[in-house]
Figure 1: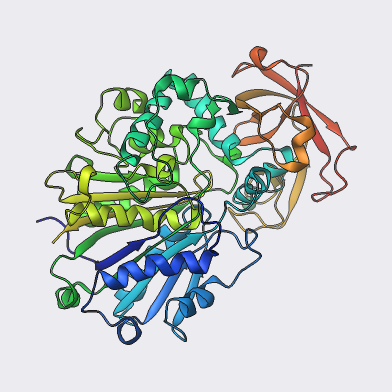
Figure 2: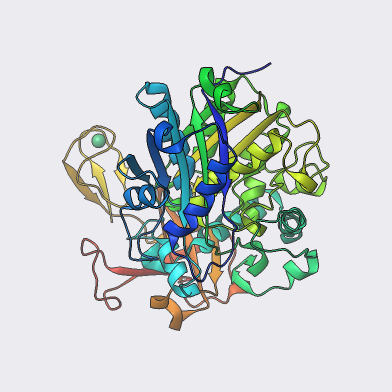
Amino acid sequence: MKGKPLVSIISAGLSKFGRHTDLCAREIFAYAAKEAFMRCPRLDPKRDIKALFIGHMGESYEHQGHTGASIADWIGLLNISATRTEAACASSGVALRSGIFAVLSGLADIVMVGGVEKMTHRNTDKVTEYLAMASDYPFEQWNGITFPGLYALMAKAHMHKYGTTEKQMALVAVKNHFNGNMNPKAHMHKEITIEKVLNSIPISTPLKLYDCSLISDGASCAIITKPEIAKKYTDKPVHIIGSGQASDTIGLFERNSFTSLMSAKLASKKAYEMSGVNPNDIDVAEVHDCFTIAELIAYEDLNFCKAGEGGKFVESGNSKLDGKFPTNTSGGLKSKGHPVGATGIAQAYEIYLQLTEQAEKRQVKDAEIGLTHNVGGSGSTAAVHVYRRD
Amino acid sequence: MAAECEQCGKKHLPPRPICDNCLSENFKWIELSKKGKLLTYTTIYVAPNQFKDLAPYSVGIVQFEKDLKIPGMIIGIPEDKIRIGMALIIHFDSIGSQETWHEWPRYYFKER
Ligand SMILES: [Zn+2]
């Protein structure tokens, strides 16, 4: 078997994604944490968990910062070492990696990692404004460039350079809504057609409403430990065998390429090298489809296909549930939803389910190796992890 | 318009107080051509509150020299006439937002 385990996931939890009108972020997180605790009866959280890392992008949504401490208390871990990580939409991908650092350092044998965001109580204008904070202020935000705007700039460049079409982008949305419809925790349970995507209202050309991920509330978590003691807590651990993270300029405009993300390429290269896994070995992947174009670029940056061939790749059906590279079986950010701080570990949760054969209707048969690709902002941060079943 | 490091020659746009290449703090201002090339663009229909009155508006990234690029609004060209690769001219405008960023004047891209 490939890949020496860095750490092992012994449990994971996910709140329902969607609109939680009566709950604030720490309350939503408590539902994710409860699921993880219930799944792992041999663990005594109060006794065993030594540190918490929680991804949370924006204190603006609820006028509430200091997320580490508040979450720790609300999940029964009062007084624990609790730290918030922030890297825009990659906030919890980075929390996972911070948890790996903590376990590997030897300072904490069992660590909870997670992420949360509560967004839906704000109107779209405010959410647009808060999300844009992840981009460059003096040049990008100041010129009215939104978050969809940045990915639209990439989409136009990709279409111009490679001939990628709006229809190919629409296929990503159709596929992810198909998968999300089978995920009981997804925000949206609705299959859509190519025509529906192509005829939806423009957000930032060429991106239309159905090219964009959802504004959602939600929380995710995982409990990780030293591989040597994982079996004490569960018979079916999932091992993390590769971890890569990289950064890039805060402004998209400062980069040499607008058609790929250097951070994602570097992070995946590290994760592949560390795990000894090749792209061809990946049985199931969760990638950061904040916009449909982002999933096409992800196929290319992760070397599922060559640069420029993302459009053809989705057309070939390779990324469908029954394809060679089933991608975003959970529904992705597009249909499962995108509570930004929760997304990175929500991806890890889906891979955990897939590699322990708990993904029900969307189960990929005999899945052994999984991958998550979590991107912050327009690619200023990327975190990639590779997993394998025990 | 851009700052050139006097020690290593790296050109910075936007300017920085310390060169990330050699840590020098000595720069000279260099004048760039006002004419650049459009690398990519989009037309924004859903805008943040501060820009709502302007929507839909087009924005693009314009390259003036190798590695010297900035994003900005494209004014006076209908969306269907904007083309990647077209030449655009930068215009400066001190009216606009009350806020300042290092006294950088507000600018737009136009066809002439
Ligand atoms: Zn220098």
